[in-house]
Structure formats: structure tokens, C-alpha cells
Length: 187
Image 1 (cartoon, helix red, strand yellow):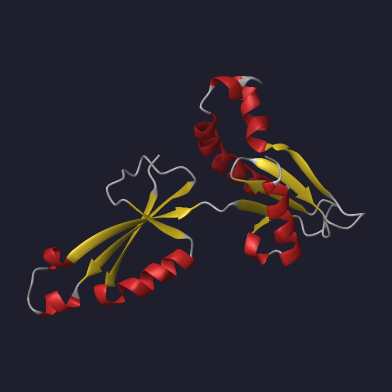
Image 2 (spheres, rainbow, N blue to C red):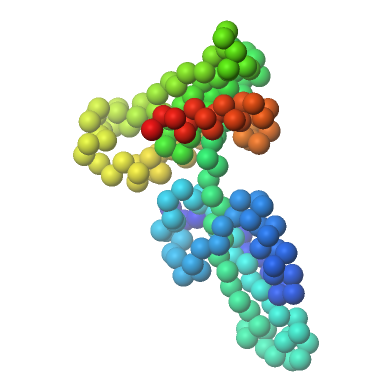
């Protein structure tokens, strides 16, 4: 499957500022010669081709083709995908990490009457039906997770039973810290 591609042209004089802006937005520069079909693991299928034009050289009459420098950026997939059902149930948040592990949380997961429980791996649940329960012992697990997880997330978004998708940074700070702690301690 080919990656989505956007191409933008930027003045070379603003290169440093633009690199910093892209990094803040989650983009990462990668070797410009990597094929679209071989995305690095953990990267989304969106490519940003940036063409830098040197306006000083252009003003001196140098052909446009000689003033270009191309860089390729890939946007990294978020570490945590969060669904919020806005309080329809006690386990308000469902969080999925890059490996497909799911964590259910209440509004206040650290409270004695709060809720914070792992609820399986969404890739396991779907792939078990296709490959059988022992698929992890026989197949290329990282490749299957990388292939299946985006499809499963799209299904969850379409079904809506987990709520709407929200950005991790929009969650309250205590819940962000709790999520990081829980996922760091599962291994």
C-alpha cells in the first residue's frame, strides 16, 4: 500500500525554523531514498516531501532545478491511541499502545474506587480468528502488528462503541502519567 504524500516548497532561508516546526508536530526526517512501500516500523503511512528553493541562487538566474534540495519526513504514529466515551460507562477511557495492548480507565484511575485494568491485546483478538491461537509463535509478530493495528483502530473509530478518539495530550495530566506508568510496567 502506497503512503499518502504531500509536497511543499519552502524558501531555503527558513530551513532551520521549518525543521523545528515539523519536529514539534511529530514529523521525523528519514533517508530521502527510502521507498514509499518500505516505511520504517512505527511510522504512519504519510510522507511529507519538502523541496527547498534557494531564492538567492534563483535571483542570480540559476535554473530552478539546480536550486532544489529534497528532504523526506515521515510522521510517527502516536504512542498511545485514546478513545473517550465521555462517561457513558465506568471505564471511560480505552487506551491502546503501539503493540495493541489495551488499558481501560475510569476518570480517576488511582483512586481506591477507580478503575485501571488491562483488557487484552486487540491484535490478538482479531488475528486469533485468522491464524489460530498460536500465531505469535509461528509468524512475524511485529510485522503483523504493524499491518493489523491501523486497520483495527479504523474499525474501532467507525463502530464508535469505545467512544470518540481523543489526543493523548488533551487528557488530564494525572491520567497521562498513569497511562505512561502502566504501560512501562507491563514488560
